[in-house]
Length: 93
Image (cartoon, rainbow, N blue to C red; front, top):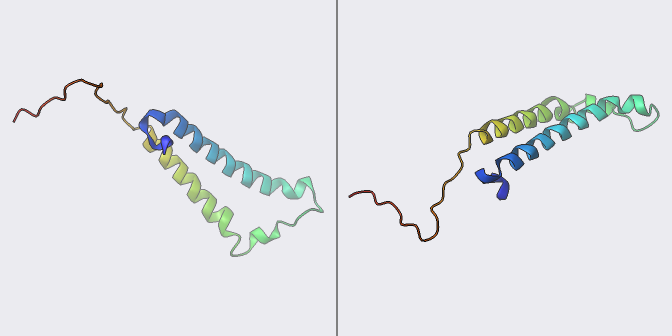
């Protein structure tokens, strides 16, 4: 996968930020859905088990995983590849 390559660190972090934005928007729209259309689809199902596990457990878990991915990606080292036809350094043995 190209995004897992340290050369694509900025793209990987941007992708993680898009995931965080998606989670924030989903929860925000779920909260204000009742105010936008009071006679629309009821959101009361999200207040009882098992559906209540999504906003109370799954969303915070995925947010934490996104932040961990960003923190690790910031520590990636750029890989240095030798040029073509450049001799490799011997270990001196």
